[in-house]
Length: 77
Image 1: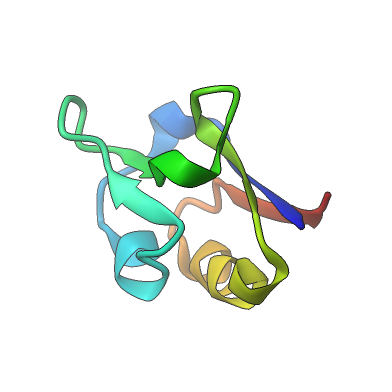
Image 2: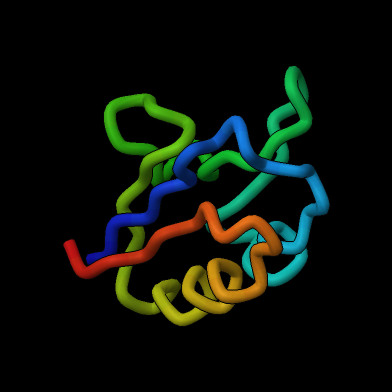
């Protein structure tokens, strides 16, 4: 399992790179148009923190590496 954080989420510039690279983990919030963790992986209902299975870790890391504002963080849980 891996922990994924979008932090600080308010710095998201809504370019959707994370969603296009890893739609299984990231989606856009319809209210503020910023990236968030897909519902089934959220930790405690927090839209900016999630726990994902090992098979999605590389996808999430690729999204983190591509994020222009470097606010996505992936670490072993």
